[in-house]
Length: 95
Image (cartoon, rainbow, N blue to C red; front, side):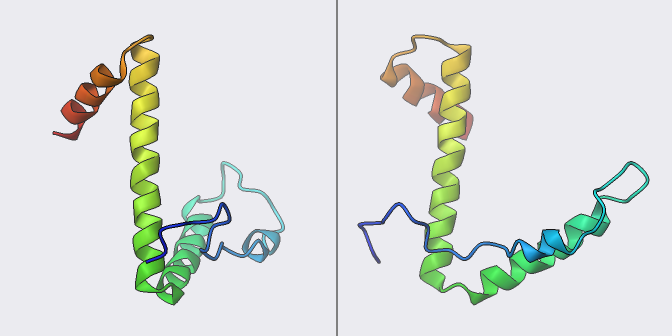
């Protein structure tokens, strides 16, 4: 696996044409699932084209993002918390 990762993501992104083909914006009378389901299917096709390594790296990036979000929430709730205290609170959340 490539340990030195560049700042550019190696993962394909969903085509913006998916959004461009929609002539109207969602309204309260339009079901959200009518917009979400095609996007879910597009994302599944993208994942299937990825290599195992790409999917693994993507999942690791997602996990890191979740930990950063959790750490940010803990820091917001506990201003000035030392790094050791933050690590303990993150461990508590993991259980």
